[in-house]
Image (cartoon, rainbow, N blue to C red):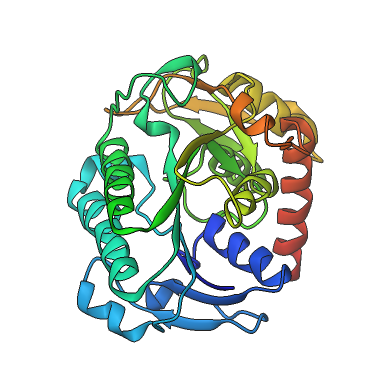
Length: 305
């Protein structure tokens, strides 16, 4: 199949494009021009801002499936520059849907977020939608657009991703990705700057486990909305303890500094993944083994630079 992957310059998008290519699909990748790095894979690389619909004329007209992962995904940026959520997450998703309608795309696979739920434990796909942030609002609006275009014969699968981590995250970006932010600080300054309470909690899932869910949508999951989560509660303190444990240096060489919370940041979320497990999915990594993999590959990558 010919598959378009938006957001392919980002963490999850790049991983998804590479794995789909390894499965033998013909891959077209899109992101902002500056985000599209050199690929060793034989991709068709087309860079542009997808919040401007006229740019979609640059794409081939024979796409079978769109994996729409492109988004502004940093909660803090959504707070300080909310127009970026509107441009890329809402208008951008509407444009993807419009392109799909006008060119005969068969299906859109859309990655939404646990941010649509707000706070909560045991969050299932039928739980109340209660976003606390501009980002969460924009991702849920994207869901509604994707569902609306089913009326035009475009199939969809929506995946609500919880806290994704793993090799390939941008370790220089300290505004996005709790696990990567704290690991990056542990690898450099040894001073961990914590936002909010150490009792805040998240549900972490490794990027490899995320892709093993996403690929199920290629030939199934018509019209479904599915959580991708571990189902496990991990507090900030738990996460830091794991980072200190997998790190080569003793834990007592680190300091932890609380720099305060910001508006719209969720206190805690845990997702129910039983719907996904019924499809045969299971996570390969628990958080400790996943963070060990993340740490080792990140350290190896840094040593090569």
